[in-house]
Length: 142
Image (cartoon, rainbow, N blue to C red; front, side, top):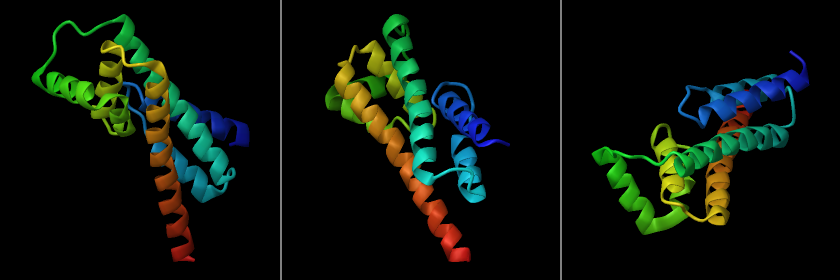
């Protein structure tokens, strides 16, 4: 697979992983790190951009399509998000809960600047950790 196609695959997987659709961006990232398809920093940036844009898509959906009925779990997350604000989006990388946090941030009309900052930071930190652990594991095995 060409480098450009590898990066596009990582971006697409990262974007889809941040939506309610299933994805496996960490697996794609690790595979590209192990095969040495690109520089680790480039891979982290591409994965972060895709995943952040997917998360922001959920925020936009929350803004334009407000949740009419909320489950007890959604209500609990909404109270938590109101209490702590956009900083909760540092957890936007978490499966299922992260998607709900992004939707609720949009529904609650959280301010764009902090939403973008904390959402992107949370997503980036996850990929930095995955990259670090993968690269350390690769050096440990050699």
